[in-house]
Image (tube, rainbow, N blue to C red):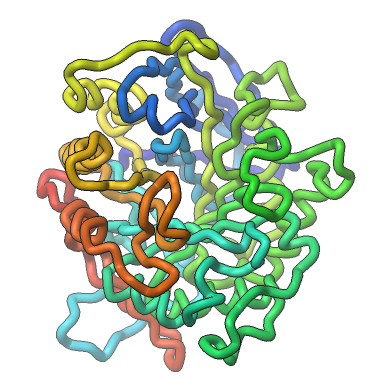
Amino acid sequence: MKETFTVPLSKANTIQEQLDYLVYDEKYELDLKNLNILQFHGSSDYDDLCMGARNLNGAKTAVPVKKMKQSRAVEIVWCAALVASQVLALILLGISTFQLNCSNRDMKETTVGNPNVTWTTNKGHILLNGKQLVLKGINYFGFEREESAPHGLSRQSLDFVLDFMEENDFNAVRLHFSIEMVQKNPKTNVDCKSNKDICHLRALELMEAVIDRCAERGILVVLVCTQLESGSNYNTPNGLWYDDENPMYTEEKVLEAWDVLMDRVKTKWNLFALDVLDQPRHAASWRANNLERNFNGYSGRFVTHISSKHAEFKGFFFVEGVNKNGAFEGEDLMGESNFPKNMPSYWEKFYGFITTTRNNPVIVGSWGGKFQKGTLDETWHNAFTSWLQDKCLTNQFYFCLNGPTISPFGEPLLSDSGIPNRRKLDLLKKLQPHPTRLRYFASTSKLCITSGRFPNEECNL
């Protein structure tokens, strides 16, 4: 029996008119008349998460209480992303199926056409054309920065970077961007010696090229709205999805920017999901009575807007939680003498319980660290990966693919000089040794899917 629930999507103008949920909290009960996707309060402080000093609260589960009539089906599933403090929710819109034949007899394959594929869920799994998706993902930033291009292309070729991903069995990427980049479509900082065919492209054309070349390698793409203004100062202006003090970033202007982007990419078969806003924080709230800060309400408006104007998009929506913690500023002096044995209880409270109480799909959207030998960070990495395997939560996106060697997260998987980080790669291979493999044949519009398997056999369908 299918574990996720299905409700009909009406032709109403707002999500509020389509779905009602009762949301139960551990300490109180709320009735929110909008898209109440599973939500957590989480700390964005990596060190506190590592030491287990924060006691997060406010975890919620949702149940449907009313079903509207007619139109196409919508499946609501959940995925969580913690470390650093992201919780994502997935909403599936639209179903299409194709049956084609692949010529490679050495592969046990299922085939689907381009651009339509079938996304469903069952028993805590995301299914691609009926086969469980075993996800091995990576975060790739740069479109939100000053260069308006994936980081590293000023020194190395895009094909080199994507080949690296394919060779190490990554089948999905979270591609970060800014609203300003979409609005201005600026020139990019791309090395023409290494990227002769794309260095002349402006930012949006380059993003299309990146998605298309990911498709050639069977790599799924999640587009992540990381920030409003372009640049490296991630903490400005307020952690919200808009900035009314700047007329370029009102909610209306933000949605218009999404329209511009979706008009270019919505029919691409490998566009797996849209992430509404990366790590809403600071002023962002999940309270229904605070409309100016209510990220929950905006998420509903966002889903309604995109699904009504861009029905060709058949993938998921990622909706994250807000960052809150259980301590006032300056009072958190707790320590944990039994680290890392203390951590599973925190992870279970944050989001691990979903797999047992609701049996919904869970994806870890961003996690990582320096992973240096003999450090607490290494201990944390090893403990976390073991817990993910035990909990059947190995569908994840590591942070990060690229970036400077010196950073809070240590060396990336691939340095600017093209040197791979073998220790981290080995860890991720151990975490997810048999991810789903996708092979796309553009000449015949065929996609061959080789089923993956989770390392914990109890997790497989």
